[in-house]
Length: 207
Image 1 (tube, helix red, strand yellow):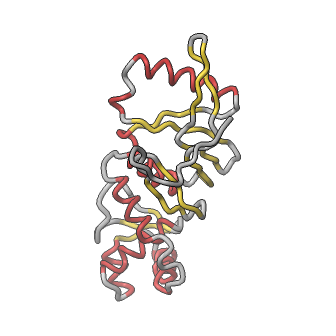
Image 2 (image 1 turned 180 degrees about the horizontal axis):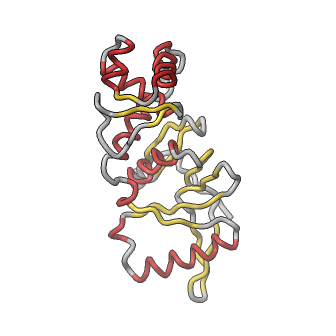
């Protein structure tokens, strides 16, 4: 077992940072794809914590053993843990990759933690990632804002409604309500479809 250190960039290794409210720390990543994966882990409700470049392990291929460090170690609310390897889809088709990944997965299984493959097709699908980035931008910025309580109370009283109606009822601008909604989604207080553009016609409901 061993741990890699990604604290500093170098001419041959660029480090990307993700500020995680869930972990109360900065997550260090080796690629923009890993960084984008953090947005999903940050706002996936089942996940309570995640770590990049966790303690590595060895896997056997042929008659040799090789060191391997997963991209992430993820912990769920139910206490279960699993590893993630992040990879562009076009790099997963070779027999070399398939053989190595199968061996890595077998080694991870012996440690009691499944190894999952997550590709750019999953991470960067549609508008979902764009919305997660907007949620992250607003999360934690308005947690003491009275407008947050106004929106939640309005939704609890009347039920699901579009952002335009919320703005009209509360006498706030549509832009301000959209910012509040993103913040509340990040705080897991309200729901909205993240597969489409969130605008004045988006319907919001309280959790």
